Image 1 (cartoon, rainbow, N blue to C red):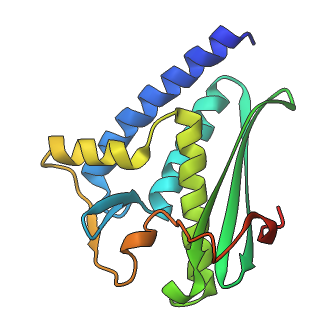
Image 2 (tube, rainbow, N blue to C red):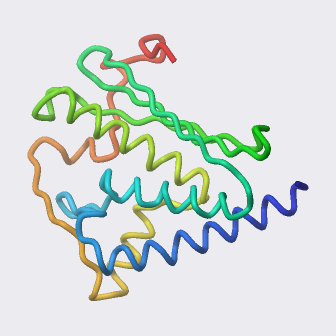
Length: 177
């Protein structure tokens, strides 16, 4: 497949994801959340979008392989999520992103792993579609009164909504992948 065709496919999937996001926002309040005035995608919402990507590419005889990986370093879960797009078992494109969560901010390590993986998956999907999911959610929320978003109020969570950590807490050398 030539470069122009791939660019057209990416543009088409971006438009499909935007339209699907609108529908999801109107019908599934558990797919997205508001935490202290900031909007984001839940694990459920990220998996719905990943499924949408898989179905879209399958229509064109492509395969999507998604691979989460995580490590816990100094009480911080670092997750890496890779989305690979293949055609006839040949790698066409690959997108990798990371996300993090503090174990101490969650009820247990399992929840911290899920949060870190969700952040990494969201960022990987954003690299595939070339759009910020949180920005799209905010735009739709401001434009449409039918949008449904769960509201969560969490303490000690404001600064780390995106899973960003101070350099003193963790360094690149600490991450084994």
